[in-house]
Length: 454
Image (cartoon, rainbow, N blue to C red; front, side, top):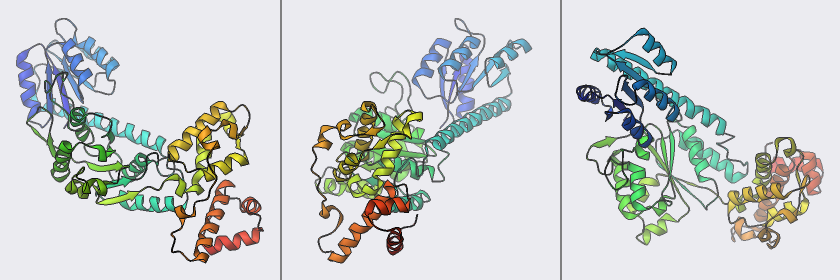
């Protein structure tokens, strides 16, 4: 629902405009002084301002200037009973969307309001698209071409085209939010907003207000109406991060919203309907939480229509060279990034470390190394102590089930070594073959054997 702030010192006009535009389905906020209007604008989510020009204290022209500074993307329609060409020109110079005179024709006003709101919505969509395009790299900044990640990409492509709710599971630091963004920007909702809320970072009362919004005076400190994340995400996607940490009382309310797509703001009685796709994520084992009575079973099945399980970094070691290259480019100076190399000792550590913090931990390790590095080669001395002291053990159990025949297990290891070498050598077969100590022709034979396409 779009929100309009009306500012006029004449009460009759406030009542008239509130009734006229409220009947069109807009949410109306009012203020009789410009200073009050600025307070509302700071505290509330407003899509359009309609202001009188001639008011005691701060004038409408001054309010227009302040609105342009405070929320430059919110359009302002000015109105006055003292209209002149000069005043209209001045208002337009100060970035007013349009200018109308009192008394006005109801249909003319409604048309002007609709045009202003449509223009505002289009600008928001364009801004979101520009942001999405600048943020996207491969699959929404997800880096990797290992087998597990290829399966994830295939799932993203399928899931994005559906309307089903998605539950993304996996350890912390694996990039679950990036997966959610990829689903959103690959879907028909890509032009709508992508809104995130961390369910584990807020107290229960704050989380309820964050999700569903609140009315003015709903609780101490609620000085103005505030839209919740569900309302802001209307037409787009809402990403509920760490949904497994949501309090039981809110689980009930979330279930109702998922079923009916309706809710009331905290302290409000009016039912608000939205069109939102929900994607959630957790590092908890929700089935276990359900069995222990910590998470509602009906909510779990509502969220878990499609499950995407993101593998930890230790199960996709082939992606480490790509990730390292990406993070070096991210944190090094542009003119230096291409010159920075990683020593063989560091590569050995990277491949044998368990990476409990996953991709996020690797990113922090590279950032630290770039800060401490004084040359063009990252050495072990620039790594945290926990990496340097980690035991270099290849844990077969992590990759190969115990009942796999020996020849299959050896093939699995061989394929991993081939993929890792290619990643490390930027897909140059000759270099990868040299790294593995085999001929180029044998390398090509094995690539064909395992269906590895470069």
